[in-house]
Length: 114
Image: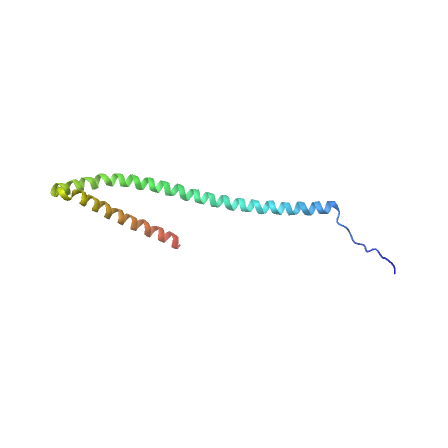
């Protein structure tokens, strides 16, 4: 039997290096895409947090403004019935807070339902 050598090309180092470089470039692209996605998520979360903080600040300002109005109204009620002044004050504040919580909760449910 004759041993015939087949004409099989062995990969050269240059071809191996090119293949390795191609794989590394693909990994780099993949990492870049992941980094870009994470960056967008971080920006969105930061934006949400800033908006929430600003809305809370405005809400606090409104609460301070209404505090004076409510205090004056409660003073009038206390003059009529001084024994139950604190009870009336706590009841009014509780009712306003519950209504506010219900309104905010409805807005939150509508946004999540979209």
